[in-house]
Each structure stands twice: as C-alpha cells, then as structure tokens.
Length: 241
Length: 353
Image (cartoon, rainbow over all chains, first blue to last red; front, side):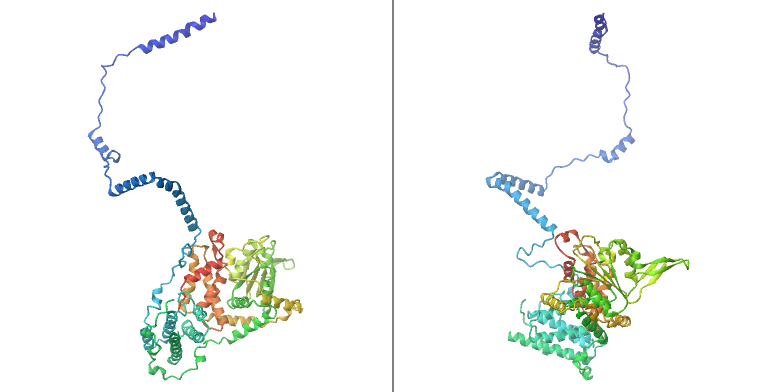
C-alpha cells in the first residue's frame, strides 16, 4: 500500500516537466509594438548634458613623456647588467637609510652644517641692519652734518660707531649686531686701548642711552677729543703691528 | 678677521672740528660732564647697606643679592629655586630683616587652604556679625617657603593679591600695605608631594632666580663661620637699614629712569620673539615686557646709572623669561632648557646702538 502511494503521484511529476520543456511557443506576430522615440526637445536636452559630451582623447606623447620613456628604458637596460643588479639590490637600501637619517636629523632639528666642516648657520636677524651697517657709512660726512646741525648727541653716537668700525677693521673686535658695548670691551685685549675704549663707551652710553639731547658743544668737544685721541692711539697700534 | 687698512676718511686728523662758536663755552670737567643727572647717591647708600647686612651672614651670592634688590626696587615678587641647603630661605629671611617692614612667613603644605593664607570671616556672637580676620598674607614682605607643596586651589588664592595687591572677601576689598613683596622658594628636584605652579601664577613673579651651589672658597668660608660658632645667631646680627618710606621714595626714583625709545622696542622684540620661536610652546606675555623694563630700570639705578642700557636688558632676560615660557616636548626631550632658548633669542635680536 505504501509503495502504491509513493509511486503514483511522485512518479508522474518528472514526466510533465519534460513535456513542458519540449513545447515551443508560437511567435506573436499580430500584436503591434509601438515604437517610442525621444522628442527633439528631449534630444536637445540630452545633448546639452555634460555626461553625454564624449571627447576623444588624443594619445600624443609630449617631449617630456618621450624623455621619461627613454630614461626608464635606459635605466631598465642598465639595471639588467651585472653592476646594475648589484646597485638595485643594495643601493636602494643605502638610499633608504640615508633618507631615514636625514628625516630623523630634520625632526630633531640638528644643524648638520657643522658636521660638514662649515660654520653653523646663524639665524637671520630680525632687525633691518642695512641702516646700521657701520661698514657702509661715510662717518666723516655724517659727523660733519651732525656737528653742523648742532646735533651733538647723534655726533657722539656716530663717533662711537666709527671707533667700532675701526676696531673691527683692525681685527681687534668681531663686529656682530647682537653684541653689547661691554662685549666689545671684554673682547679688547688688556692694554692701553681698553681703558680708553671704556671711557668712550661710558661717554656714548651716557649721551645716547641717557637721552642727553641737550648736550652742549663744550661737553661734545670733550667726547670728541677723547675719541680723536683714541683713534690716534689706534692708528699708532696699527702702525706698530 | 681681515686686517684691512683704514680708509683715508678714518684718519683722526681729518675729523671735522666743532665750529669755533660752539667752543666758546667754559670747558666742563671731564668727570662731571658725563655724570648721571639724577642723584642716585641715596639709593646707592641704601643698597650698599643692605648688601653689607646680607654679607654678615650670607657668603658669596653677590649676584643673587643684586637681583633681589633689583626686584625689591622694581616692586616685583621673586621665586627662588634651588636644591635644599643653598640658603634660599635664609637669604629671603635676611633680606626681609634688612627692611623695617612687617614680615610674615608661610610654610606651604598640601593641606593648606586659601583661607589659611588670605584670612577668614569669623562670627562674633556678642555683635551678631562677621568680622574679617586677616591671614598671614597681610604683611609687607611675605616669605612663602616651599610654594610648590600647596595644590592649585591654594595657589589660586595668590593670583589677586600678587597682581592687584588686594584681596576680596565676601565682596569687600582689603588692600595690602605698600610695599608688598612675595618671596617664594621651591625645590626643583623634589617630585613627591609637589605641584607645578600654574602659568598664571608664575607670570606674576618678576624674577625666577636660580640659587646655585657656592664656590669652593665660599664653602670654606661658610664652614669657617660655622666653626667659629656664628651659625645660631645669624639673624640677630642683621639689622634693618631701610624703612618703607625709604623704599617707596627709591621706587619713585627708579620709575623716573631714562629709557631710550629704541630700547623699548628692543624689549618688545625680545619678548615678541618668544611667541614665534619654534622651540617654544608658550611665549611670554606683555607682563613680561613690563617686568623686563621695570627690572632693567632698577638694575641700572643699582649700578649707578640714571638710564637703561641693552646690557641691563640682556642680563635680566633669563631671570624674567625663564618661568614664563614653555618648551615644546621635542626641545625638552633634546635636553634644552628655557635658559638655552632665551640665550638663542637674545642672540637673534640686534642691540640698539
């Protein structure tokens, strides 16, 4: 009984599927298919849209592309040689190590100019030193103008800068804009020049930093005499040297 | 340096003479011609007297004594930093003793409360009202020992009094007496139980002074003095040599010091550079510029001048700036200090001349 029940409906299903697969539907040639075409307005709209603007890219090589292509070709040939293979194998690692060291030094802000035997870089001064470049000033003319105008405070300043220039020219001090007057005084070797320069420095500081705008001609004459005496002494030192 | 010959114009004989009409005046004495226009003899006498009193006990530390005097004359507070045993507290106590003004001492501890410093309102049952009881901050010279042992809450209590010389309690303003100077000490090494001072408070100190070890000769002199038995009565040997009125008068004199306009620009450039320096995370405030100016004026007066020179500014720059700037972590890891950066900054700026 069970066998009958199992055989009758299940056995019939594969046979029906097989029949359906073999059936071929006749072509429907009677139904009219409407042909739809975009209107002229729609076409115009499509043509105006950016997405439908197809431009043919010309594949012309520039001079640079040609140069690079040849370079790569030459490099490729070079690297095929025995020496080239060695360089490719080890040189690339050496380059990476150098690059890594450079990056580390840069991150640590290490000035490597000293290691290369050069003087370490000095940061640029924030001041505009052009106006105070003692080597570019015509002190005689400027002193004459200041004295003629009765601006003795300025004359004392110019006279002091003049002395600093002469000391620098003779190599007795190293001119540097960030140095104070007392730095120069300390730089001068012990001798007769130092006390005289100390006196000049004191006079300059009293007059210039002390804002002695009303310096009299008699006071200025004292300062000028001291300066001229120092300059004579300096000239003697130079001749003796 | 190349030894180039002098140009013809540099000959001393070619210097243009002063016009004859100018030289008709009586020639002044050279020594008097360039003497200070302001009489600083009183200030010098007082300063010398204080130095001598300090010298009775403190061996060496001349630069420290000069800077402390500078701060007192510039109306500024001082933070003394040094390892234990280098006479930070003793120096501050002695300095306070040389001035005939009220003095109080505060030992900062982790459990110290703001009211322990400033004072508190106490309820009086018989009057049925509150009465303000001033704290130890109400003195002319206040020594705060181990200032970094109190937490930020207590440090904050000092903000108003250090800057505005007053405290406000329950809406009432209590001004400090003039002079009012805070001398604080701290140990740079100890970490356990200490707190870093807030930047706002550090900025209120005119100077942060490093108190270093004495030299070998100085240490021998210390031992000799101690061996002679003078250690125990050190404070008794020091006398008051300046009153509050004297100090106020000298401060006014310091305020009138001449400062060439280019020097003001120089100070502004120095401080401004701390704000753009790539090695600094935090630059100095305009209060630092004012501190540098006031300090330089006082230092110049102490050195017998009635005008400020770039030397004064350069000398004080590390003491004024070191506690007001913060290094970037990279610079700290490289082992740089604030003093190194200040030195670099000083080298960057041209001296006005």
